[in-house]
Image (tube, rainbow, N blue to C red):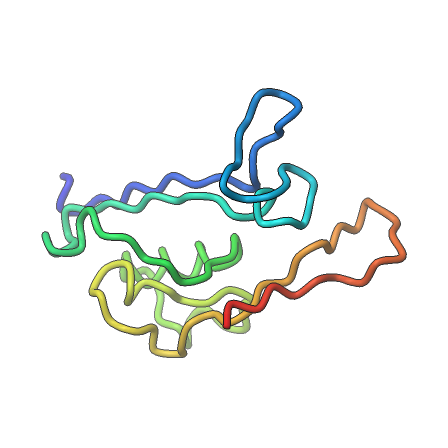
Length: 129
């Protein structure tokens, strides 16, 4: 069964220092645009991954919207063409085969765009370069 299973664990944002979280070495925390508020670890494991990828680290940028196309491709449930016009990127290649994504790596992530919060600040784009 584990050869046909993908286990993923992630978070939606950094921890809240006021509740005891520590995001060091990053500055900031939950509800902030500093890296401590948006940089979170994620874990992906599958028995189908090659043994040299199990336990390795991927340092590329990934956004929450990338999970759907990545997992759809990794499971073979859909091709990029079948997924239609998605905001997310398919990052299954670096996670499961160690190769570059077919459409390239994500180079920026849109931050601070909250429809429930009125702000005069424009959205911030985090540039990975």
